[in-house]
Amino acid sequence: MVPGTPEGFLQFDRVQKSYDQTTLVVRDFNLDVAKGEFVTLLGPSGSGKSTVLMMLAGFESLTSGDIRLQGTSIARTAPYKRDIGMVFQNYALFPHMTIAENLAYPLKLRKRPASEIKAKVQEYLDLVELGDFGTRTPAQLSGGQRQRVALARALIFAPRLVLMDEPLGALDKKLREQMQLEITRLHKQLGFTVIYVTHDQTEALTMSNRIAVFNAGIVQQCDAPDVLYETPRNGFVADFIGENNFLPGEVVGLTDTVAEVRISSGDVVRARRADADRVGMRCQISVRPEKLFLMPSDHAFDTKFTARFTNRLYVGDFIRYFFRLPDGTELVVKVLNDLAAPEYADDQEVTLIAATKDCSAFAPHKAVHEDGT
Ligand code: ADP
Ligand code: MG
Image (cartoon, protein in one colour):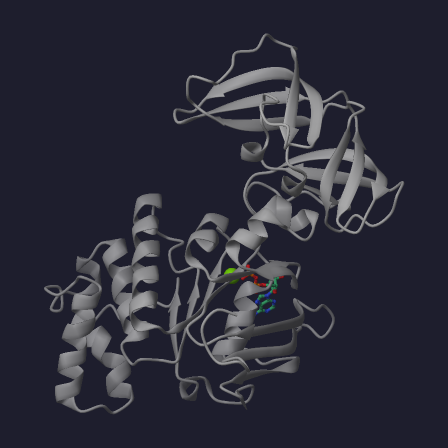
């Protein structure tokens, strides 16, 4: 855990949820969150992320298990008594109120004195850089500005915990990136604890202290962004986070940490042993496009195999090279577009190299679709 108390600030203890008494949409969910931590629940649509937030907010009951905030169970506490700020995509601003009235609302609800409300509203308008917009209505703001007001409204009563469920989903790419920076800045400045939900892995990687990757109601791995990216625990995580090549093969040797895998070119690839657990099993090697190199310029690279060149795609700062293995597997290598970027003839045999630590051997998994489903 990053900053905070040793026993954990927020704890999910074997939480499960079923809406229909038969299927569990959240299974055996355990998570300890430290005070001030930014934890993201990431996963495909329908994997149970929002259900976890709804249980935490108090809008859905738990089927079993417990949720504790600062050591006290909140599983039966009414939502408004949980002291939680929320930014949900469909949790809109009040359209008939001005921006200032929207911000004042959570403070009025908590019966704060008028003088304090006035000062706080101006402070939080300034905080999200909307100091002169207090008298406008939501309809008179842009999408990004409205989202900043929603953020200020969730933070203004200094909640101990802030929940955000796909808060930037409706914004275009540029605004979304601005708001990501904005939320990260406020989190650093004010030090609140965040549980953030998204299906966008770039958003999760750039904003979070830790990410819990969900699939079908089960956490596949919960780690810091760099740990998830560099050492995925299984094929689902390797596929869902970032871009990856998957090379089918057969395990021909195993040590505690390394799997030796024969791929269709006949080469034996040495890979970090993830969940591949048996000599003779069919498996997959994953290796990221930027971790594969085209020329054996460094003998420290201990994994080497040949593939045939099929295509070269110019993307500006990078060039993407495409190769094919004898079994038809396509793979991509990402190379910086500099003077050393090579030219190949069609079907030319090229040696590719990678470090063992950057290859992972997995039991086969079902592919994740482009749209995250
Ligand atoms: P995510 O937020 O990851 O997209 P959800 O938590 O919304 O996933 O949904 C998880 C599963 O629970 C899905 O199969 C969804 O259809 C189901 N579900 C969500 N809300 C309800 C509900 N109120 N009643 C019945 N089923 C629901
Ligand atoms: Mg959802």
